[in-house]
Length: 339
Image (tube, rainbow, N blue to C red; front, side, top):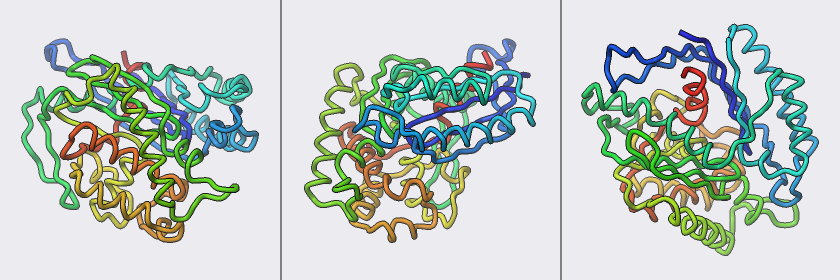
């Protein structure tokens, strides 16, 4: 057993997982997957990617918000005695001209250098984090289980899986069975689409105009065309959705009064429900979105764009539902430390 710490620093949020990792028992055969036992899992909205699409640089205030979160995480990691730490940075820091400032700050605080990974690496981590558990459940022959909030849970899911990680600056697509077959990252995410299409004279349109909504859909459609050059999206038997835009839509669909990871994890949200929620979000004001009980304050301005990305993907893939996973790139990073 090994105690590990994984940090995922994206365009919108920075997240920490400290876990006890147990390697697979060779006596259990090829289906064994090992186990991650959460000791601490937390998230902060820091909006590291603020303005990157427009300026090409990380804003000083965005860097300071991120460094403040890193200082908090360093204390948690030390307190729990993690033996190994891996810090992975994604879209915003890939794109920024001044990413060396970011790297130096993280090293000073945490003592590890952030790995500014490629989109394909990001996709592979996401796939491993999301599907190791699904694969393990299948191997165990578990049956269909009811979930909270009427969402239901399904295990023994059909393969291949298409794992879609909708981030702030980019979206990763990865298709695979027990392992990755094809992966692609494209530059559409909830923050990037909001800043590119919903900001007018420094203010976010509230609610968006039909023209702005159409512009987001056109951008996402073009990105899906690029993704399909590499990943055969329509071959997916099961669509697995990751990250905050997806989990927030799921929480709304389940009618939760407060965020409940257990209820959300492996819930199945039908296409019709995703369409209904997306229509509601894009026609709502800031105050109306903020009043939704499960809405994180840091997602109020970007959730409409995130829901549009999810809906567009489901329509392109022909998915009747999305299986929502709370386990994603963060778990994939931890698995990489577990060996």
